[in-house]
Length: 300
Image (spheres, rainbow, N blue to C red):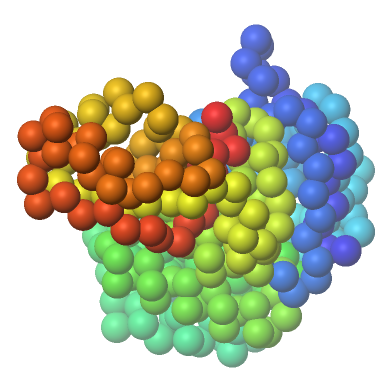
């Protein structure tokens, strides 16, 4: 088992950032920690990368204890924090050389591992890191986290604030790194990225809500979900929340996701209710649940 977390808890004064968290990540797995800001993702990452000490519980990375074997862990993991933390006044090449030197290696020695990523930023190798675009900063940070050929890679919200094209490219890079045998633990607030992981842990308020494959988590959503829209979406949400049989109502793209308390009801009845509230161009159709729907249900 590459990552083992058992009953980890951490508090900051009266705030419980992490509350009795346990999970395991298999060797070579791409595991996602999915949750909103403030859920406890970064605190957990800092504990696993030996930057914080937990109040309770134990954890190990590649069979090394995060407290007793912290030096060995730092030599065997790569960590990409959520905030860009490289030296902004150094060039791309200088940053990469610096991190390689820290770990007693060279760019040339592990070039094959970062080649696919580095070739995309190599034309800008003499540009200062602070002058790079968000997507280029992201790729440079990933190269620096990989330059010492880690066994485990920790990526804390790596695509936050990055454009959709760069997000897609980044996940394609992660899949290629996984094929090279690297275990990857990635955190993200984006529910659509959860589907790109082998397994995920949904986290909220420092507690794990559920752990499974994205497909299994969605499969066990307990109710039928309906896409609903009309000519007045703001009023639609208000009216659906006033409907006596509503169970949940959430905006979802161009539709509202609606579930009903009853197992069996007629769509015609709901249509008539909305028409009585002066809605026009009403669309009601069944849809498949998503990770986001499941998260909202579990987080209630």
